[in-house]
Image (cartoon, rainbow, N blue to C red):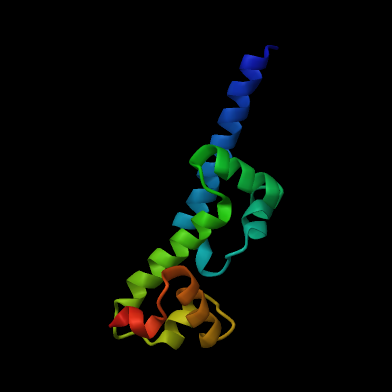
Length: 117
């Protein structure tokens, strides 16, 4: 059993983990779960391993992808002026609208009110 064969197996295994991780994000799991540990547990790996695999396969750690999906969805919803910040905050399970506002500010460099302008 050559090391080349085990490298191929490892790459396939990593690609499979990454694909399953991204599929969970595409299905909207980030709306309730923004911790790497949740995804790692679902995939039966450690969060450290999931982040390593993500970095190897995509060039980015797992939390980058979680935040990217979350922020893309939040920005889409912020453009819908019929939704209040509280409604959007609730959709993502933020503990408070203030925490939601901080999250948006950290990730977009603007608070939700300024983003909407």
